[in-house]
Image (cartoon, rainbow, N blue to C red; front, side, top):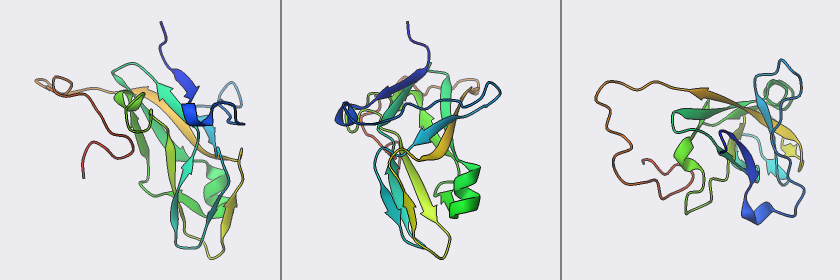
Amino acid sequence: MKTRGFEIVTIYRGGDVHLPERKTGASTGYDFAAAEAVDIAPGEGKLVPTGVKAYMRADEVLLIYIRSSAAFKKHLMLMNGVGVIDADYYGNAENEGHILIPVFNYGHAPVHIAAGERVAQGIFTSYLTVDGDTAGYGAARTGGFGSTGA
């Protein structure tokens, strides 16, 4: 039985997509690379496709952070501060659970992200719920990116 990991989404199979990996034995985060080139103008935000989806246990979450080198050297930040990938995002009907990285260019020059360039990192962690929490007893997630509310 699979516990947690990464897979390539269908539309990127056969391409040059890199599954996230830790670069050293003490690295916490799994590096996410761009599945295709993206250009971001100053003051602009774009979704960077990774071509990857993540599976995990129901009581876990994958938190996405910008890589420090992308923030410092390229003046990029995550548009939402920290990305939250819920366990039920995997395999959803809208986009199969494709992880898209929402990046904002706060610099003064255009930024080019090359296909295969590492832009973010993901950290799996478990979370706690409150007494009487009834989430999970209703309808299953049906949408993709940003689908749990307006």
